[in-house]
Image (cartoon, rainbow over all chains, first blue to last red):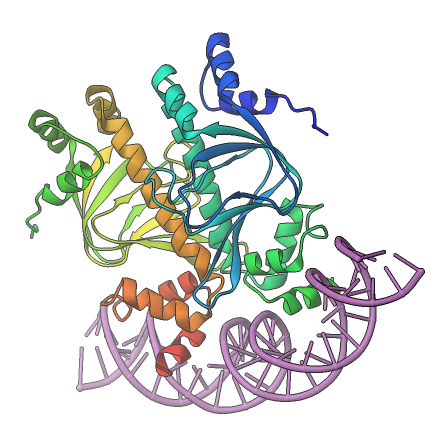
Length: 194
Length: 194
DNA sequence: AAAAACATTTGCCATTTGGCAAATAATGAA
DNA sequence: TTCATTATTTGCCAAATGGCAAATGTTTTT
């Protein structure tokens, strides 16, 4: 069964960062492939060179890695209507130490590296738009992570609830706990106390 | 008394991110102003639209803000040989809610917004170089912040010592404690226990 | 040098969070 | 449905960190 997916969200998103005429928009749409992931599927895996850039049309991804103690840590979640790029290795063509997993069923709009480069060569505004998008995404991550250190676990959990209201009860506790920097049991107790 | 400052570090830094011919380099050098800050001086202040971009030739800056409880929080430190830009408001021309302060005596190489725009218009590679620099700086911040949540305070302190070996004892405890997400007294105890 | 202002350490105790294992609940497979 | 697997909750106690105020140490000013 295939879900009905349009390019509208992607195009509107791109247009927030720069102008594109209809011809350019058509070109972009032709380079996109729809990829559907089931909850739990991987979009990219550690140790491989990530070769794709994706716009999340629907669903939520998480980026994670194993720390030195061997615990799996969720570095951050990426909500729909955002791009998912491996910030560490997309540019450098080095293997990633992180992997990207679907937290819920997802519909992704995927650009292969080649299409991406084609667009960069064909559409003069492309690089500028992508840079703005990347910078904005990174700034948001910094702004989200930075205050977390100064807040206690309960506050961090409440903030998460605000950002992803209907997610907290649909994902494994372990995903969320490692993102919040606490253990599963602590998160369980925090939940109870609210 | 004026300290002797050359443009070498700045130019070498820029050249890591793109090619520049001698004529372009001269142009850049002509746009730069040397600004010396004493320990404790402010480079930019909250509530104002930051109008400058600076390369830290020597010294260390910190970016900080007041949280909802009114505590002053050090968001991050910026070491010499890096650019200091207000990531939130440089592009948007909105007032910053953060301020930037010299943690040690500093020598900054400052571009006014106008010079910066001139260079952008004159040197074709300029925007690309600056984008790469900005992205790299942001990625480093994310990568530094993200694991901090998963580590205990002692580990965070030890990591800081590694990154800024000769700084920890020369700055107020409060700067460092708020960066590490703990109280002054806790940091004091952690120090003792090492 | 003395005083004042500021920064750091310490004691005491409360609160938060972790670690581990067992109990319970939820999910998925046969 | 029933069994097996996996996820979550809970109890118990230990460890980490916070809050506050007093003591001590350091720096700056007069």
